[in-house]
Amino acid sequence: MATSRRTFIKNAAQLSALSLLPISSYSNKAIDGKTLEINLKSARVDDESFWNMLRHQFPLDSHRTYFNNGTMGPSPYPVIEAVYQKMMAVDSTGDYGSSEESRKNLAQFVHANEDEICLTHNVTEGINIICWGLNLSKDDEILITNHEHVGGALPWLSRAKIQGMKVNYFELGHNAEETLANLNKKITKKTKVIAVPHVVCTIGQVQPIKEIVALAKQFNIEVFVDGAHGAGMLNLNLHELGCDYYASCCHKWMCGPKGTGFVYIKKEALDRIQPYFVGAGSDSGWNVVDLPQPSIKGYVSNAHRYDYGTQNAALWSGVNVAIAFLDGITMPVIEARVKFLASKLQNDLLNLKHSNIEMLTSTEEKSRAGIIAFRLKNMDYTKFQGEAGIANFRIRVVPENGVNCIRISTHIYNSIEEVTRFVRFVEEMAAK
Ligand SMILES: Cc1ncc(COP(=O)(O)O)c(C=O)c1O
Image 1 (tube, rainbow, N blue to C red):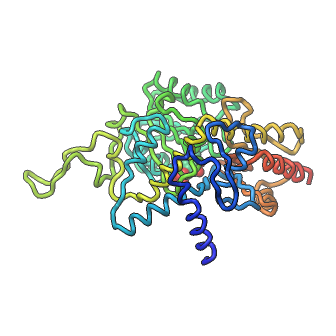
Image 2 (cartoon, rainbow, N blue to C red):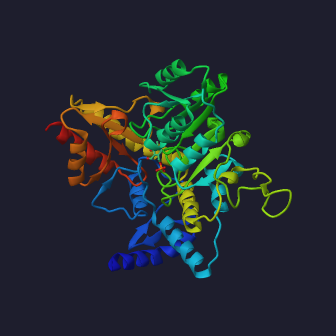
């Protein structure tokens, strides 16, 4: 423990000068004895020397291949350093610090307005804010998919259990068109909300959100998107996407501090979501002692009405650096790299033409991004996970909704070499 603390401080000291610089000036800096010659903004998706150098910005164990960004996104050194520095500042002065800079940065990052961003601790909190805040009555119906994460399903199921509304699901198709047709069939006169993941956590399918919104609007239905795998994986433009609400986090694909997230609430929809948990920052005035009686005047005119009280300024400072880090590479390049590696994995597995490998992720270009899922017919998915662990691959298996599969996420710190080695490993397992 003492050694790792010393190592961290040594690394932090080496990196402190670096992390104070804007991300675009990261080129040719010495990190831990290695020289980084990163020319950010000129990265090509298949330039392995660039991506290998970028990998050195992450404290990832070099003996292990980390393919589980879909669960948790490791942070690069500058983010870790920013959190450490801000904690030192807060704890040496006793000053709170602020999280408002993050609201602004997040808004720019996802192409929304600052007024539309509520800060949360994770995706699930954002889902709960929308789910419980919507004005729904007992006879209303909510449509979700058959590929929800527990956090995407439970708030709706729980509200329905308590208040009597009905939750129905529609099945994902093999491609966007099929999914839309399945959804269309399930819409009834009572449907008030369609709540879908942007990228499903089970098989990585990217949902046709714009088309879902267009369909929903014909029937005056609200659209909520569980964007756990959107921010940091896809080049998001929430205004263009058109949904009413979008919940995401900074601790997966954004590689930010754990326990940070946000929910987007379209400006026009702010008054449709009742804030239930409120406190400092939520109100436009209140009193306890003045006549006629204690009261709250109202809520602030922006999404700050849903977040309140003391925030962890150190974590939000890390979020700011995570955004600068990603923006330094640029989101279109990141999306392309993530997809390039995932496509290579999918194509290489398909090209094995092995009868024991069952590909679950759609091969349709617009329906796939950075998560690939498959099954082995000759091996239980949990056994595969054990074998993969022994071979130093950190993967995720998916028991949710009976999907029972193997899930691989590829991010900017992964390499072609890691994908190739993993494909060889799958081939070995498929032959057992
Ligand atoms: C699709 C989806 N929704 C929601 C969540 C919950 O995220 P959080 O743990 O940040 O609340 C996850 C987490 O993996 C997820 O994949």
